Length: 333
Image (cartoon, rainbow, N blue to C red; front, side):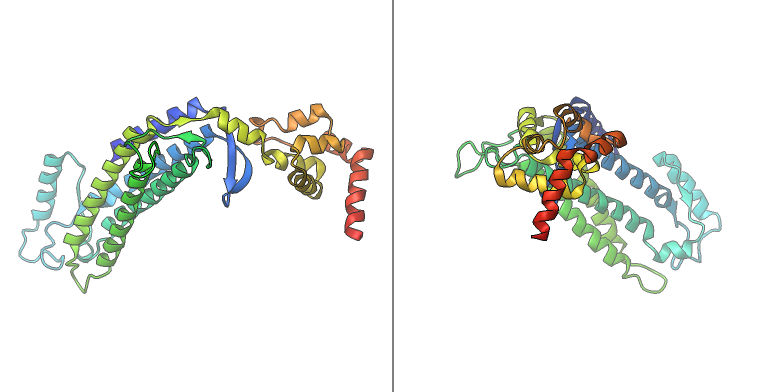
């Protein structure tokens, strides 16, 4: 699993480098928001996998603590005093893992907390994978009547009813894998809580579902990488057309025109079918040069301090004052 996480993370980072300047519409609530680059999107997916690796690394420490020698209830009755330590040492040599004897074997006889923690880390990874796969399906939707920003590799002939239709079969498969892992974690959690008094007898179920989740995620990550992400293609022209034909950059004008004015400009653009640029220039709220600088799509994908001098000049201009006066008059009426 760790190897597949690393390799898929590296694949996403390669895509991120290739598309660090490919601007696309960012969306929140499934509505147009502000520009973002595919480099930033793909880097986010890679970072989620890196965080998943760190979570699993933290689980290893407790998983390496063994309660051998505790016998029936953790007290060590009938066991040689050195049995636990010698057995763990032998297992460490055989496995190459830095195994340790648990400091409190009474606790390890009834608590499955380390296994629950590991299952929870797999659950969280599964949720991130499911989210990523849903994103891929949405971004590849269409291709003519949907978003159509990315093209996923075809892995089967298509629909049995609609010839030539390419379904996002791999993301759908991995999403189902993710939900199975979520279900396994629910079973693990319930079984871990079912321990009574000095022993939890549900360890077989916990071990089975945990191993199953590990196998599922390992196979799912490999499938997603080999049959989908490696061959993923971004339609740069489609992204450019969507950004240029949208009102996404409007947020960048708020420090200069004010929220109220920008909101009215956006409404006017939507009503009239004109672009944001046409409406702003039509009211002479900004010069063409200033507007070009403020609406540069790539510049809008990173932090940028507002220009206080430009803001003062804009708000002192007769055109801006007249526009604000019309807005105030409209509200008064």
